[in-house]
Structure formats: structure tokens, C-alpha cells
Amino acid sequence: GNSVTQMEGPVTLSEEAFLTINCTYTATGYPSLFWYVQYPGEGLQLLLKATKADDKGSNKGFEATYRKETTSFHLEKGSVQVSDSAVYFCALSDLDNAGNMLTFGGGTRLMVKP
Amino acid sequence: DTEVTQTPKHLVMGMTNKKSLKCEQHMGHRAMYWYKQKAKKPPELMFVYSYEKLSINESVPSRFSPECPNSSLLNLHLHALQPEDSALYLCASSPRSSGGAEETQYFGPGTRLLVL
Figure 1 (cartoon, chains in turn cyan, orange):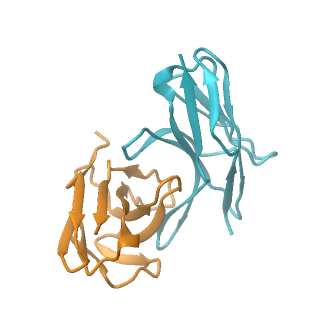
Figure 2 (cartoon, each protein chain N blue to C red):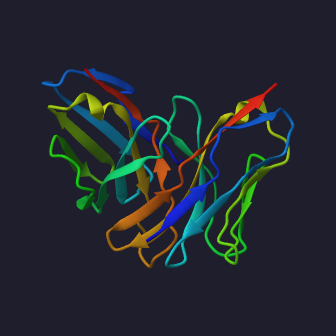
């Protein structure tokens, strides 16, 4: 079956530090890959996505590249802000006749200190 | 516009109450989803509707009853819940386009449910 593994948090960084959150996956087909962000007390927001190998998703200074050879989709940001403090979920989607199934990683909490 | 709305934002109910959660989207999406999320955990899929028909029920107890009155609306009827059902309930939708095209799920803000 499909699975997603993320680095465990919390990750604590100072403002303007470089961020990497590791994500690796196992899938039987050719999934699409996503990063969702959940701010405290809110729902999930789509941060970025990539639909095929070597695609790079980017949004709000965050980037992730779909690496088929290493089955990875690591999230990076060059300079984090306090407002980036949230929980980040890596996910893959597998479309079948029943619907679009998302498999989530366990989530990584990011805390950015001023 | 990628907005999914959910009401109410918060709900407190007793174990003998009947209540409903509502979800709405106007993006023309034809798949809608209910998830349950406990603290510090990822969302867990409960139900999937595809073209207004229930396509997946992840062995959810019958005290949760989904309903999809039309392509824009999704309800979750709650009856005789237990305290362990307290959680954040998230709704999502996706295009469900034909031809196996990539699907992206868009989530609502959630309803935070407390069962006393």
C-alpha cells in the first residue's frame, strides 16, 4: 500500500533560518505529491503540489521537488518567519474509481522564534 | 476561488443530542470528503462522495450519517456520539475530473466538536 513518512517534530528555528522538512513516500503507481499547512485552530491549506517526477512546486517562498529516484518530496524555505509556525503535512494522492485518496504523513510541527 | 465553507465553527453536544455539520463548495467539484482529525494527528478519512453517491465508507460507526443533497452540499448527521468522538471534522472537495487527471483536495476550516 501507499505510505508517507515525515521527520518528526517539533522543528524549532530562529527567524530567517533555512528550513528543510523531509518527506519520503512509498507508492505503487505514479502519485501526485502535496504539502499542506495547518495553522493553529484552522483547517488544512494547500501549500504546494507536484504531479510528476522532477516537477517543482512552489508557493510563498516554500519549494519542494518530486524526486522519483529517491521517492522524496522535501519541503524547503530559505528564510522562515514567525508566521510560518504551523504543522506541515506531506501527502500523496492515488486516484481510483472510488475517489481521490490522500495518504498523509504524520505531520511536522514547525516553531519559529523571533 | 478555492473555498470550502463549513458550519458551525464550534459545536458542543451531549451524548443524546442530534446535530448536523454542513459543508459547501461552489467550485463545481464532484467529489466531497469528510475527515476526522484528532489533536496532533493527520486527518483520517471517513466518507467519500463521488457524483453525489457514497463511494467510500471507512467503516465509520452508524452514529455518523453522511448526506449529499446536491453537488455543492455535504452534511454529516450526528446522533448518540461518544466523548471520544470529540475532534476537528474537516470537509474537502476535489474536481473528480474524468480521464485520470491529477486531483487536488481543498479543505474547509473545520468544525471543532466537543461531546460531553
